Length: 277
Image 1 (cartoon, rainbow, N blue to C red):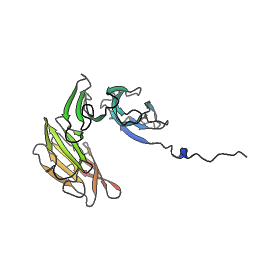
Image 2: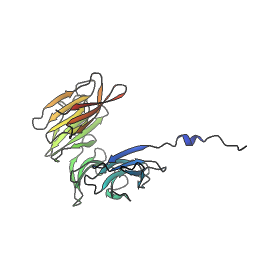
Image 3: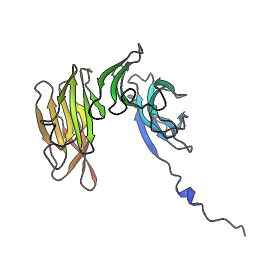
Image 4: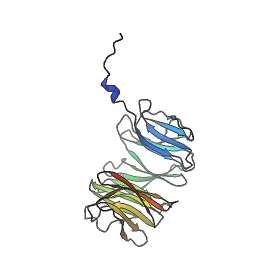
């Protein structure tokens, strides 16, 4: 009889993972990052087809994928051999070789934040010239003009949301895992989203429902995180929704349905819905 060796333990650790994905605005294409061929690459599915094809072979980790609203290009972030120094690249919508867009020295980090509705302005954070606290930049894809719109100071600073008309944006200053302050920046002026920065709390998942109203998650003054709002016109902070003995962990806004979707945590994750009005 044929004698077979015992299974190699390695085969049980070769699993498939999907780390990021994005869907085009018209929902005709899905792009995702996966190790389907042994290394991390970008794969795509053109609906209604259900089988993936290789979209871009990079053999590198990917930290985001973003479609242009008009399907002119795709943005993605790749590191180099697992160094986690992600930089930003552009790809054609039909797939191909990534082209450097916002890149620098191999030791620099570039983190995608947002893309304007017309697809002409890219917002990102970088460790270049401010490795400790990061700077926030705006890059004009049409003119190639790159502008620092805020310098990080005092704590690592991340852009977390941009107003629909780009008139303001939200930053998170991360002082510690349990101490993260949220600010809205209007015409260069930083406004604290919560009443008192000296009370240890966190702010996360800020969402603009229009140019003047922000919703976000915070545990300011409470044991469990809840949904709060900030009115840019009045500067008023309000507690909007609390779930008894549960912490809100994620918040998404559906403008078309005028509805929020949020996730709560209490030993397990729960998905819930409430109206923005």
